[in-house]
Image 1 (cartoon, rainbow, N blue to C red):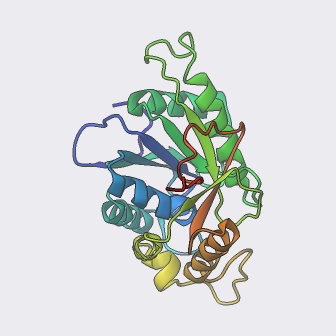
Image 2 (cartoon, one colour):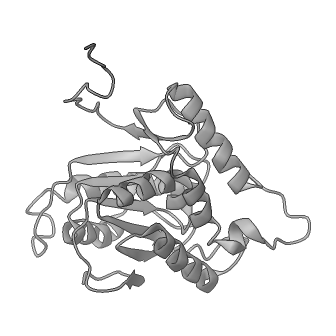
Length: 252
């Protein structure tokens, strides 16, 4: 097991996965990419989850509550494991020390796809998380960087949207898994089901995430012209399409 695991919510040894989804705080992964992950898990892909912080600065709930909620959400989703890097909430940064904790996990999990939140966000942890993951994604392939861990070159780094607006590189149809995504999100009772906030608290962003998650998914689905609900992803480089069968129907 690599050093730096604040917690490891898994039924056994950490094993290779096809997709590793990374989020700054517990619940960010589920908000941004939960429907796609459920769809891929149901298809047979191996999925692991990694939270960078425990969310201890969150106004709602506390670190221990969110830990239990994160475990329940991972169970509902069917992920192989859920890790926490243990970085300080409100203090995520793309530093050599943070890279030194993240790169070994990438090399241990050996994912083909790495997913992270989009950098363009008002939350400083979200912006820093995207920069950290981009750096670790690159460094993971360099054999002379942390040579005690065998180098690994993931195939794709894709950034998911939480509530930002951006031109997507591709959309994933989650029409069949939107309701399951919302059920996973309900595992975070302190955040979305029965939140308790100080009197006079003013939201800096959304006040009803479940409502807005549905609205955003349906908006992306409508914009696709082909789905009832979708999730959006942005990539640094274009994707190569090898099969046009899903777009072109041959006449008999």
